[in-house]
Image 1 (tube, rainbow, N blue to C red):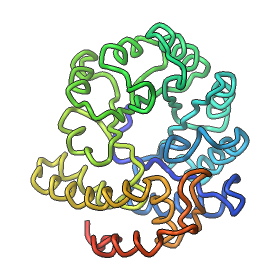
Image 2 (cartoon, rainbow, N blue to C red):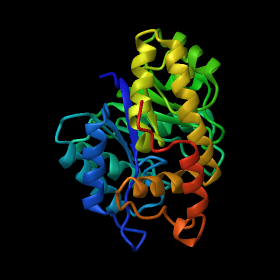
Image 3 (cartoon, helix red, strand yellow):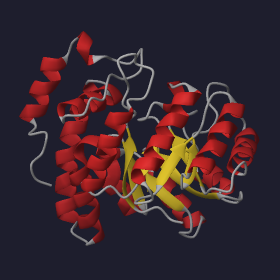
Image 4 (spheres, one colour):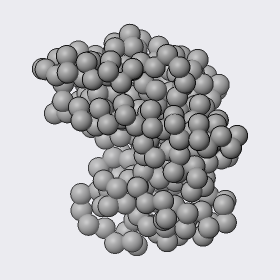
Length: 296
């Protein structure tokens, strides 16, 4: 299976306790994004705050997603955890409840040798029968280079990588090393057009939650060869992304989902909470940028 198209990295809406999943809102957001052309979902990654949620809530969120999507589009579930045993339990749970693939960042905090990372991915990827998408993120020890990722591609079950590293030379090298067989998915939203030009098959992103029609249009225009139009859309998207980064991207994304009418809650503590201040500023800046967009 090769994942293609535009796949939102789904937010995890939380209740007032800032700990438990708001099931009603999660279902509403999924339906909304499906209606806007989502080609699938990446659940409980960085955007979904998976690493800082309780294991039981991570399982609950995935169960809600699988039930609501009901086979209409594929679901990739991020299962990495600081504790490896928890990662394995989450991976087995993902297979049991019907996810289409699992994914994980490399082990973090400690310094790990290339051999250690290889063994980690081999153990986790082969703990289920699901396809496995590595999550190459610059926040995880600076990210992996093309040689390291290509080596992992030799492991059973590993079929692709979510490339959230701003180095498209390395992405092109990886595409070449794996003869185009590896499923490479662009991560940086602000550089989707660059990822597609370098050979990415799809995009997964945070800001897709609040600008999905624009990302779908960018992808379609690029695939049709309308590069000038795709670049114009990327410029438009990036102006809003600049505002979101200024106000802390995950926090801003959840607040913008609330602005769209979804009771998304705040980001997990200690990430920025908009109820503590900053609401008028971000709303003014987004209005100046024309968001929410009425045209693709």
